Amino acid sequence: MKSLSVFAACMLFAGVAQATVQYEVSGVLAVSDCPAGLLSEDVRVNLSTNVQAGIECNASQVAVGTCSIAGRTTSRTVEQLDCTSAPGPDDRFGNPTTVETCVPFVPPQFTETTGAVIYTGSSAQGTIIPGYDGAACSAAAAEAGAQGRLQ
Image (cartoon, rainbow, N blue to C red; front, side, top):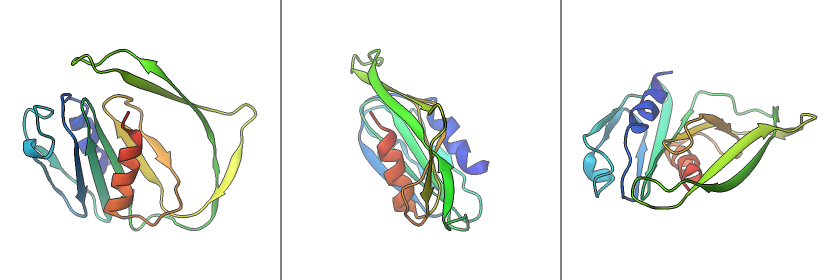
């Protein structure tokens, strides 16, 4: 999916910064959006039609959230994941990190949800996962999902 190309680009960068950027259309994540050397160059954010995104930066990570304003929002049943956090290795700047691991419950557990699916990923965790917070898709909702992935 084109909207996730920004995630792949962001996986290449790490450093020290704090920023919040929201996109309702394609745009650029500028080096100055994540100050202190987190990005070595501007990153082009290419969004597909109806896709919105939010990007968060912190001391050593970039996280991306995306959703589609044309996506499903009706009630549906989704599988729950069992997520745990543990201390991870220090990043390249010596900052402590946290490693979050999400696995399916055994036996599987399901819940009813509504709202948009917010797909998120981060340079620290790598895996893109769906989130169901019950909100409508917006750049702000995507950014909130990204913020939740930062450690």
